[in-house]
Length: 327
Image (cartoon, rainbow, N blue to C red):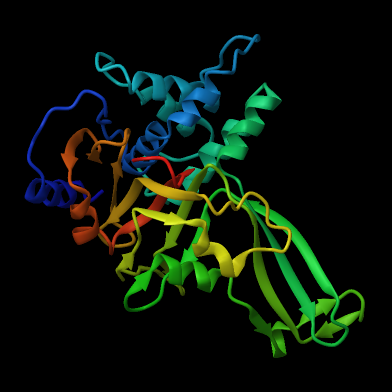
């Protein structure tokens, strides 16, 4: 799955070095997508901390996703373990995904989190997993005739941002996501108060943000066939909650002025839409970034990510922190 292209690119920019903390993951049956997402989960130390609160009393099941996810994340910290994620992959192959098939990293990200909640026997731990990533939004549709506001709350595990032709910025993509849209002609909304379709406005409002914010840069378009947008997206290493000011709901909760988000993982898709390869940049601590390309892991300067991979970054993971904290 484009592995030769990816490794050639990495050798071009990185010096070889050994590092014991970040484990490389062998590519089993074209598993680069799962490998990259697992690396992002491994860098999310909060997730393993939550999973370790779970003490199942009914034994273990080799097909239980949260159990195998916890094992994989623990084994990835053990440099002596020969295949830290092999059983986790088998678990996914048994019930959710097909081997030797290209998958979408955002879909795999959601799949693992959803199955981890559904198959978790401890409801409190399942809720903690959800709360770690959950973005709460509210869709508001306002009827232009009667002015009635139709509200529909929902939640997301990643913020899906469309990218445009040409240069993009993360802030611009966020503003577009929350931009008010007019519904006219065939898009008229069926107003329950008017009991007929009416011209309306549609808007998504932000209610709350999670400790871990996943941003999905939607590079794939499907108009009868799937194509990939290689347009560059400039994204900051740190940003404050002010970036969401335009999209906040009047009921917004938890958007504190003294908090910001710090980038700690990026899942990258290299190559064309149908024959690409997933890799990941991760910062497991505040000191150093690493580039994980399946079994190959190398230290890297953050400038390489911004200089080379802005047109292939696919998932951005940010951690909430206080503006007064360092790192």
